[in-house]
Each structure stands twice: as structure tokens, then as C-alpha cells.
Length: 309
Image 1 (cartoon, rainbow, N blue to C red):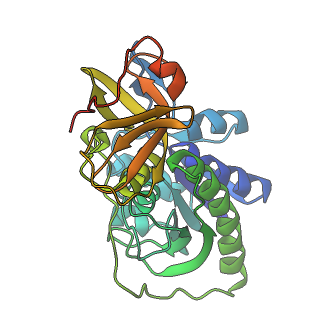
Image 2 (cartoon, rainbow, N blue to C red):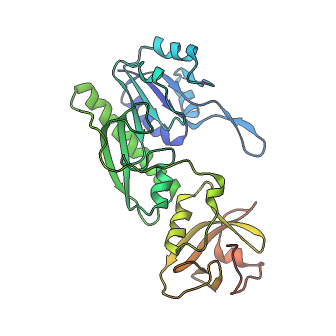
């Protein structure tokens, strides 16, 4: 089949690799424009483009996917299928109608749960122990299309948004190949989504701020969900600190949220709205990630000090 691939970040690269290895006929790759990145604001290419350059395939980076010229270019490629994996923009009807068969999307949740831009982060934020990947026929709604295939996986206690993203990107690539094969041999039948949908809007920078009045378990999930971006942060002695890794410690004691109640070889213990949080790794602003014991050195921390609440 002639396939046009839409994708932008590293999450999409395993799916593109899988299609190429399966020897499907990729007739074009669409990714977002290069963006300024880092302190020097140098233009940086999306991960999909960086990989696709090696293939010699046609790469398109339209400023607007609604442009008539761009839509005509896609039409002239005569795709049987358009595959969309984390492209980052809503695909308009004018493009959805181009392929002979359909447009399919690889989405990092078990739809209808966590429709939207940040399904991985919100699954962690909500304390889910199970998630997965869905392939669906795209329509004009927000991840509302008919389901083709789904594959589930467990969320481990050590997973964060970074590790889970990698896991789901590879799971999505395998599911995409299964879906394309099933479409070709006619063994797949789209089914409407059933159940109560939930939503996963994009995270904002301010969503990283820790609310110490929440439970230790909720804060731990917040830390996992916001790594590596925007990062779960708070202030201690006017210094911004991003917490990289922490564990929830159950206790019946009613404490003062944000209060440092213990400093030992096992962690930096902070009271929360319910339970205790044991901080294991931190990143002071402008510095590298460090274990809590290295952070403590030279800062004269004492029990009774407070993180900003």
C-alpha cells in the first residue's frame, strides 16, 4: 500500500521504522517545521525528520496543513492510507478524505480513556496501573474515531512519563503493523468506542508546581507524570527545586504539609496532606540531577524547615 506518514517527536520514530522494515511503500513523510530550541534558540529538527533524512524519502514540513497547495501535494501522491502518530496538530477533513482506505492514528491510551494530547502523563497522574495503545480510524473529533485494535500493558511502580513513553512507542509500532496487515487482508472491522471517555489536555509549565496539601501518593504520581517536562517543582529557602524521584510512605500521623520532618540515609522526608514523601533525587535550578544526600550537603537543611506550600 502507498502510505503517507505523519509524525513529529521521538514517540513516532519506532512506528516509522516498523513501516519501513515491513517494506510498505512510504510515499511521503509529514512532520512539523524545525523549531528554535535551547538557550541559543537554534533551529532543531523534529525526531521524525532526523530519522527520515537517512531514508531519502520525501519530507514535508508545511507551516499550515490546511494550505491548498499542501493538500494538493498529498493528493498527487495517491495514498491508500495515511498513518498519524503524534503529529501534534488536528488533521482537517480535507486531509482525512484523501486516502483510498482511511487515515489511522496510533494513540497512547486504551480509548475512550485519555483522549487528547497527554494520555501518558494523565494516566500516571491519575494513578493508573494499566494503560496501552489504540489504533483507530480518524474522524474530525478529538480521538473519537472507531477502534481498530488495542493492546494493553502494565504501568510499573518505577515508570514515569519518560519510561512509559518509550514502552508505548514500541508497543504502538507493533500494533500499527498488525493493523496495516489486517486492513490489507480484510480481517479487521472498526468498532465504535464504548464506555465513559476521559480527557488528557496538554500539560502547562505551571502544572509542575507541587501542592503539598495533597496526599504523598498523589504527589508521587505527580512527580512521575511530569518527568521530564514540566517537572514537579517547589521552593526551599527561595531555591527552586525539581523533584525527580520520590516514594510515598504511608503514615497515620497528621503533619504540616511541606515540612521537612526527617533527614536520614533513606531519604529526605517531607510531610504532606496525608502520609510522608521520601525524596530520593532532586535537581536544583541550573544544576544537574543529584541524589538527596548530595543536595543536602552545604545547604544547612534542618528538620522543621518548609517547602513552599
